[in-house]
Image (spheres, rainbow, N blue to C red):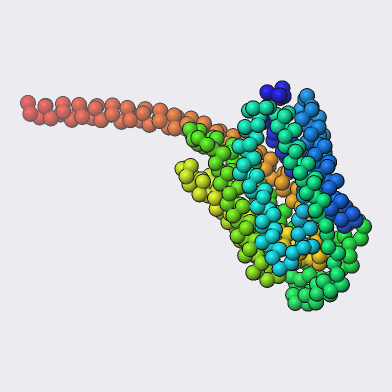
Length: 394
């Protein structure tokens, strides 16, 4: 009740804008990461996100939130998020998949706990004080960013990276000069990376649809069900398990063959997404969400280790940045397109149902008239036959 407009429209528009901005800014963030390093970029990003979230708690209308939350907070999160994917590769080589799985599993924990925390906070202290409490988490992130101490790549590491490039022909890490001060488009000369960076966003056009429209579907399909938020909790739980499990498995998958794990995850996520409308029972929907969350964790945990395999270490920052920037397009456009398609199909279904009812009524009336005519003709024929029989008897 803090705003005059519908809260659902506010939530959807702000969510779309903020998530799109987080990923859209990543190519720019990667340039800052190359110039200033992971620590400075993440510290500034966390500080900007803290200011944006805290200032959002002092607004009195909807419009300022698009600036404070949708742009300032989202851009700050982008500057804090992208270096967190890059810094792990500076410290870990052999167990990078497991480490990345452990780090990304933290978001799954918050996916499980945060909805309940937000519900308690908004019911007890209201929206504005909830935003102020959440800004404390951003301040903790600001402090944690000071631990990002990147290790300089040694000549030995670069040499080993160059030697490793001869082991593969198409899917290989090729040596390029260290990234310049601006966008390093030379990484697109790596055929495997170019295919990967274009293929992932194309696959993601349908990836985000269930996550955006799932609760709306559950509310429409299972009106009498209780604790409907459990579907999101199940996705969060198995996603965390999947990040740990497949992150560990990725350490045993050599080189760029880690891409096959992402392909496997997309296959299962697609199958589970198609099975959601077929679930007539809430328990079956829970089972589908559990499987989908498991392979969602696989996709997320493999992303950074795959980038480290496709390009050299000093190119990874911009390689991840370009990928996340491309991902902003399906993340922003995909769910609204799916919503429009769903509304169009609903309208077509309603029109088709009305026409079917009209046709059934018309054909039903015609059938009734035909039946009455047949009955009258049978009665008249039977009376004639009865009269002939009586005459013959007489």
